[in-house]
Image 1: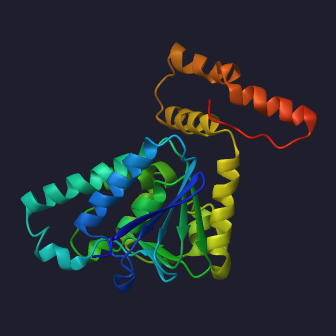
Image 2: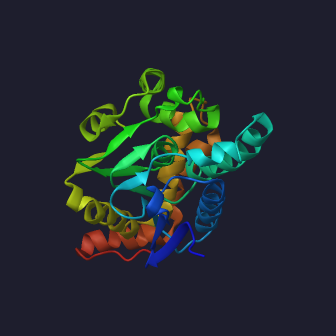
Length: 259
């Protein structure tokens, strides 16, 4: 049986693929479980410096959850709680992943697919990509854990507009409101996303992880502790700092070891 979540390694880059192309990569309960397991495992792999998330093929990143499961796995409140626990575990793993995440978005990125992409740090899409969350037409709510990434990324007003109107919108609007970070020609999405990942992986990996954590801490709105402030100087005690500034002075390319 073919896995619905695939993982490949290209050096320090991990490519994670939602793999149901015959269903446009519509998400199922086992897929949410497998994606969460994958992200948690990669988060604990020091050799991984960047994770690229994509959907199989070039028609769709993910159109959201497979509606067929509503009759079998989400038919009542008890089932929905169990299903939601898996979804929320995975979204939490993405939100707290210390490794930089790049979303490679081909085509459709709707509902749960948009939730996953929103948890990524860099989001590259094609000109024909489409976004939205028309779940008001299903009588379905986007729960707090599923909505938090959109609110964090877009702010409450934009997130509410997307949910209340339930319309599908294009890549240029997604760029304008900050849902994606880059729009390129459809044929260039793979190359652009992988080049972004390569630039990230070439940097000092400890620095990337610090920057992700510092941004989360600032975005939380909570006052910084003395320990958090002091951690802003910890990089000066790393071997990578010595490597980086000496390479700069010598006009050579640094090779960071993550220590």
